[in-house]
Image (cartoon, rainbow, N blue to C red):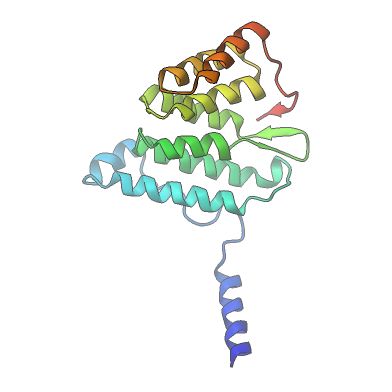
Length: 188
C-alpha cells in the first residue's frame, strides 16, 4: 500500500508541476494603478502574493545556466517584483530581494537581470524606503556591474543618509576617487 501511495503521489506531482519558469502564477492582468483602488485596501495582500511567487520562482532557477535558458524565468521574476513594488511602494523586502535575486552571472560570461534590478531599486530609493540596504544594493550594482562610479557614489551617499554604517560613506568617496571598472561581463 505504501508503494502504491508513493507511486500515485509521484504521478500527481509530476503531472501538476509547472514545466517552465513562465508557467504558474504571474502578475494579475490589471495594471497596479487600476488594481490598487479596486482592492479595497487589500493591495498589500496581492503584493505579498507576487513577492512569495517571486521567491518560489527564484528557488527553481538553476545554479548554472546561460542567459537564454532562463530568460523567461528572469523576465517573470522581474515582472513579479515590479508589480509587488508598484502595489506597495514601501515594500523594502521586495526591493532588497530584487537587488539580490535578479542579477545572476551566467555560464556564457554575461550577467542577466542587472538592468531590471537597478530599475526596481531606483524606484525604491525614489519612493523613500527607509531601509539603507536598498540604496546600498543599487550602489553595488552600479559600481560592480555597470561601472558607473558617480551613480554608485550617489547611491552610497543615499544609503548613508538612511542609516548605513560608516564604511558605506567611505565607499562613496572611493567610488568617486578611483572610478571602479565594471566586472567585464556583458550586462543584460
